[in-house]
Structures are given as C-alpha cells and as structure tokens.
Length: 493
Ligand SMILES: *Cc1c(COP(=O)(O)O)cnc(C)c1O
Image 1 (cartoon, rainbow, N blue to C red):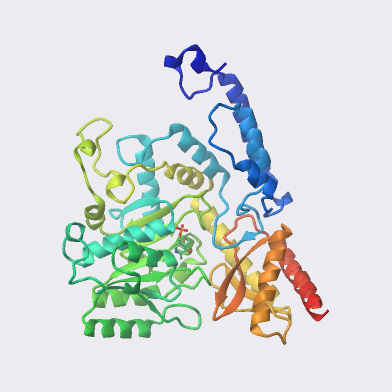
Image 2 (cartoon, helix red, strand yellow; image 1 turned 90 degrees about the horizontal axis):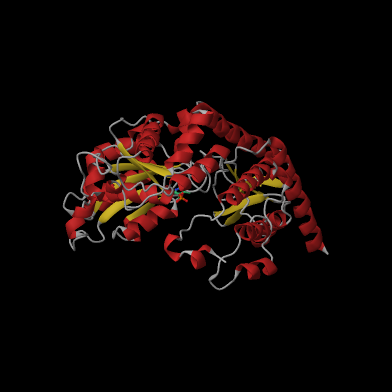
C-alpha cells in the first residue's frame, strides 16, 4: 500500500521511511567512493550489450518501485557501461575527469536546489565569487562581468551575442539583422576554430558564411597576414567586419593563436576581440604554460570551459566580458514578475538571468567553489603542467619508434600521430589507424581520440586527465604497436 491510499492530501514525493532512505544513500556514497578509488581496475569502455539496452527500454513507469530496486537496476544496467572519461586512460575528444569534491558539490547543489536566475541567497553569492575568481585568474578587471554557463559552446555564443550587439551599433535586439546588414557582418577566426562558433553565428542570424575561416600556419595557428588581407578586402567590398575569435588551444592540435597580434589588429580595426579558451585559457594557472597564453588578458571576452582542464563534473563553462554594461544590455529583460525589491529575497542588482539566455539555472558554482577551496588553484595548475609534460613524453615515445609518426606539432596536451610501418597507401593507412583505435577501445584498454588533418586520419591523444600516469602512455603505445602489427600480418595473409 503506498501513502496515497492512506492519505492522499498529505502525500508528497518525500520518502515514507527516512531511515531506509538514509541507509540507501549511505550505501550509494560508499559505492561511489569505491568506484572512484578503483577506476583503474575497470575497462575504460564497455559496449552496452543489446540485452541491457533492451532492459532500459520500457513504457513510462506508472506504479512506484522500491528505491533499492531502482538502484539495483542502475548498478546492473547503467554503471557498468560508462563513457569512461573519468578513467586514467581516457584521452578522446577533450574532457575532464571530475573531482570528488566536484561530485559531492553537485550532490549538494541538488539537495539545496536553488534557482540561479536571481535573488538574494547564498548560491547567488557563491556564483558571483566563482566568477570573480575566474576574473582574477584571467587578469580581467574586477568590474568585468561573467556568467557560468553549460560549457564552451554557450560561453562562445554568449560572448559573440554581446560582440554583435555592441559592434553593429544599432538596436539589434529590437530590429534584428536589418536587410542592410544581412550577410555583411563578418567575424574572423582560423580554419581550426571550433564548430560551436559557427553554430553561434548561425543562431545569431549572421549566417555561417559570415564566419570567415582564415588559413593557418604550419603549427595550426592563425595566419596573421592572411587575416589582415582578408579584413582589408572585406572592407573594400563593403562588408562589415566586427569581431575576431582567437583560439587558445585548438581542438585538433592544441594550437594557440598569437593573441597579442590579434589584440593589436582588433585595436587598429575597431573589432571585438574574443578568445575561445575552452581548452587552453585555464592553463594560465600553470606557471610554466602561462607564457604561451600571453595577450589573453587583452581580450574583450573569453570563453572558458571548467569541465575540461579544470576537471569539474559536467556541466561547467564560464564566459567573461570586459564591458559589464554591454553584457547586461544584451541580455537583461525584466518583466513585472522579475522586478526587484529593495529588500528581501528579490533584492540585489545583478541577477544572472540578465547576463545570458537562461532564466532558471542550476547551482553549478558549488562544485567549482568546493573543488577550488579544497585543492587550491596551484594544484590544479600542477595537473595541467603534468599533462603537458606527459604529452611531450608521449611525443618522445612516438618519435623513438620507427613505426609511429607525429602528424602535427604537439600543442599543450594534444598529440596527433599514427601507426605507419611504411609502404602503405594513404587510404589503407587511414583504415588501419581507425581499426587500431577501435580495437583498443573495444578491448577496454584505453579510449584514444581521433581527427583528420590534411586528409590523414590521426590517432589523437588529449591528456586532460589528472589521473593519467606515464605508464598509462607506455601501455597504450604497446597496444597500438601490437594491434598495428596484428593488422599488418592479417593484410599480408
Ligand atoms: C570543447 C570546445 C568547445 C565547446 O565546448 P563545450 O563545453 O563542449 O560546449 C569550444 N571551443 C573549443 C576550442 C573546444 O575545445
């Protein structure tokens, strides 16, 4: 009999037996700690079998289940088939690992469950503090504005929206993109710019073609002369350049654009200077990496991703904007039901809903606040330095072996390479390397990333991983050589 049968008026979603709930929750915490402490003993990735996927497919549950049963199902069907990105040997795409204080911060964020749209309550002040820390780290003036967002995509989108509204110099919010401006408002970035910036251009009504992708140098950084020439040509053709996106750590190879040069161009040309720092911006906390990022503090706006190299559990991104008025006037909208009072919970001048697209927002700041307090920023910096050293170590392993070759300069913590025993046509080499990558992940040994550079399929190892040790890299190289050799032997049969 459930509680509804007894007293429907007093029914709620709370447990009827708090003690049983406490026990179950304790068990869950124990399991989570064991799971995290013993990650290394697990396969990095396991293919979810069809039997499991079929179990997950059910009609919407109508009647209640015991919480313990639900948890058992989680342990049987969900927990054993993770993405693997918290494992020491996951190096695909570009992800962080999470932290223990991060996951418990997320837990408490859900327990407190505040809405960070606005209001005068502790969570609001914690987010403001975390944003201030980010300004301090990035050497942005303290009166800059900022917002925690879901990630780099949303951070870039937010900054580009402000840039558009400021630089187009008419009331874009009311008038939209006028026929006079349509197709003419140009943003520049290197050809290695992350795709989310193009999405932003599309959503902003500027059109994907208005993101002009400038050729890159041999090290995959933006070609400054090509950029200057393109701006000149575009102005001559009656177009309206308004922003440049510099990338500090490209997703393919970790390349860092010459941010000082971009800043100069933007000053001369009166363009908004935005930096997509989703990968590399936070690396300023590593003393030995910081010099590579010089000029980043000159940006008008920066997109940071805290769920990447700062290892916050997903989701956590941050955008910083130097001109707080421009930021607020881009997003602020205060209907009668969001008007502020001079006292009480609805007081305070800077509600986060006035700085971005979202009204209701999660308390993502808590996990960041807890993690940074617990470890201190220097320790996070050491994790970054360590990964950069590990990328160099991996580069050495590759260069030392005749059947392996680097395919791009190592940028930050990203290594692009392939298995190449010689005398194979490109198409076959591409297939061979893809097969090696798949074999290694299907064996649960490691998850390696991939990309294609100049039509060459690359194995790509991005070591944004505070748990990786050098032996993990030895191990994956051994596996690549083993599987590579096996495939070659098969080919010869
Ligand atoms: C990951 C990434 C993004 C997108 O960030 P999300 O957090 O995935 O939305 C943007 N730019 C660069 C350079 C990235 O590496």
